[in-house]
Image 1 (tube, rainbow, N blue to C red):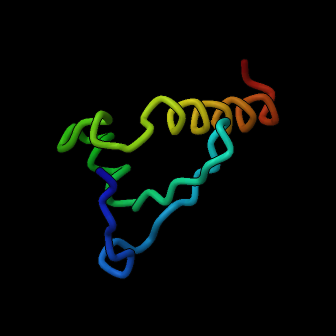
Image 2 (cartoon, rainbow, N blue to C red):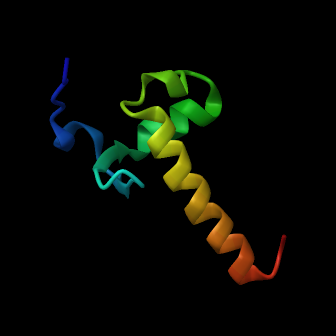
Amino acid sequence: MTRITELNDHRAHYCIPTPDGKAHVVPEAMIENIISGKISIDDVDDRDQVIRAILKDWLNIKLREGRH
């Protein structure tokens, strides 16, 4: 079931276009909570697609910096 969240309650946020052609809006606070372990990455809709998109962007940044 799709859950709709009022984005005004979760500023700032990131729009993450995924390889399957969708876009996900993820609040910065949610990403921080995932990093800190307060919530699970499993709580993100289409988790695998979102992770792929984030990793792709991260790798592109690292390659531009000259680090492998």
